[in-house]
Length: 202
Figure 1 (cartoon, rainbow, N blue to C red):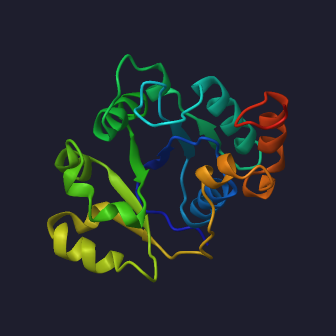
Figure 2 (cartoon, rainbow, N blue to C red; figure 1 turned 135 degrees about the vertical axis):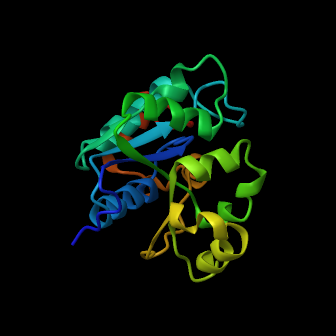
């Protein structure tokens, strides 16, 4: 049974470069949708100004994410950061989402490995004060202890989900290994081949 974390509706935001979106991104989204009663789930790709080596055009990353969305329920792609004139902080982005959905609770997905580094994020205090953060528990990272130790005042802002089978999957591995088409959904791999991305389909 899905858990309802808010008396209001909930919008879940899953950000990243999605260069390309992998099977792991799909599995994370699917797991969250099964666990949480949310109205809408958004993939949030970074814009082309985001300082990351090897980042392909957002036109392709958005198109691939839309293909992934076809395999999930109530799932869409947000182009807020793609359309922004500058690189936005997470807090700025979620504030823009909130302006679109003023009566909904906004929740942002954060990796367990990024949790300890959260105090180094720009505007992190405003972020955890105003928005929920979804974190998966992991055997090798004591998420509960980190939150209790570093964010005790805002423990109620964190939504902790039990982890699922950890997959050794990354966008980098797909980009660097031409024989690993299994790391993405078939529809994404076909798109990559068709548009000759990442050295494939040439």
